[in-house]
Image (tube, rainbow, N blue to C red):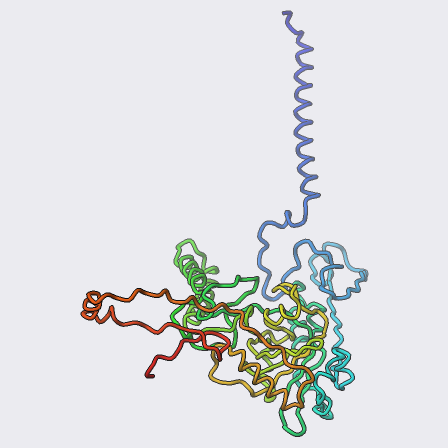
Length: 455
């Protein structure tokens, strides 16, 4: 093979070098284009340093301001003004300002029977004496307090757009009225609102197995009582496991001081939850008919309390209930999953039975029976019926709740001991002792242990 001339060899080397440079340049340009057109989330994947405590946290992430607010109408404009040179203005924090001004309209509460009937046209017919229970100024101070709390929460969270109340949750209450029957003097608190779903609560004595844990689920309710059996709460083991993991992480040498501070608070909370689950039983959202009220209601003289009897009225049906849980102070309108499912079979912890302001809640302050105990649905029926009679009666029978908790398994029968076995067992007192087994009582909605003879 003939050797290449020196000039041709040099040209070949130059061509190869040019190709390599072009490949490197193309690779670099491709990387720049990928980074430029990459989604915002990928570009901000690295941890953002914590903002200074003197400034509100920055708004980060991929934000579409037109869709940022949950139902909040957004009016936006850019208003430029002349300034100094760019170097100076870049250093001045007041040179590039976004001003947020939320203008919520505080609603006017319903006051008259005609206005109440706009929410539910059947209401005057269901409760014929309702119009006689309306005083000259029936609006409860709780209505103003509720919206004062909503406004305060909006002010506190205005720099956290992701936690602002949505339009739905701001306008969730139509009215709160103080009622009193002129003859019986029975007082009642009437609310018209929407209905969110509460699936909280647990009770190992009645339901040893958990019914699932949706987002934000809590195994507790404000209505609670001392446990009746040794059967553990179905959510106790999971809470103890969380506690152990937190304690192990806290004890690890690699855990930072900031993380330990957070873990210390979590451990304190988890220990309290474990002790509570060991000692108490609670209502069960999936089986017990109860409603939820804001905590501020319990602070008023004529407000509601945990355990007070109540009615939920929707359409032409009246559902007996109790006040079973306390919710946040800036939201109204929530019932247990049991009530929601009865109203709308499509209800779930994430799907409201009714989103419109169509639900009427009637609470009878000061009617709670103490000490609290497992729900007795027959007693609930009778007690609510008596209270309804004290406000003039109802034109329809109250809805009757059926017990949907399965009875405990029957104990396995044992064979009769033979005479020889009897003589053997008589020598061992521990073998001859038996403990009473729980049985279902026909007068109670839920199973309770039968009393021991002689006590």
